[in-house]
Image (cartoon, rainbow, N blue to C red; front, side):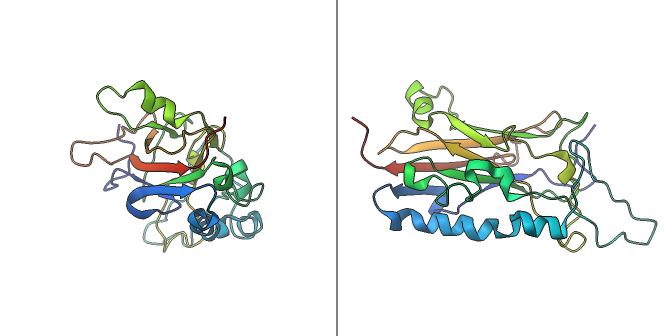
Length: 230
């Protein structure tokens, strides 16, 4: 059984903040090198503020699809949307740490799916989830995995909950805000390039395809320059 409605494409993944060539590079000692990333995240998350979400969107029951059917030729528009509150991003919300960890070499990266119109990404109440790590080669060396260090995810289960699907498109769901997963690097190696890959997994969705090797995954480079602890 397909996990997609008819005509729905395989989803892609995107990250925020946006860096040149999917690269997040900065120096801890130079705020100007990471302030742009912070401002990018502030702007991106403004529509996720809890007060905004409560005013416009519904508090939906989790782990089930929010299906809003049309009645024949009569369109059920505008369709309602479920709240995704900024506080759900915890340490990566910009509310507890207004620098999103960039000043402490613990940067947050936000992940969202695209090409999701009509997508039904899970079954049996199981939501798709994100995992990140060293970019996979045939045999990734141990040092590549160690460079990444431990990660924390927000929401803590790293899922795109089923209640945010299906998405009916911007015209039908004018207040829809995409669900996000944030990954926080807790102890990434300094002064070295770290090639990171994040992918989405579900019980109906396979990351990658023969035609689009980037489907369901995203790769980026992280480099944090700073003084190593003695």
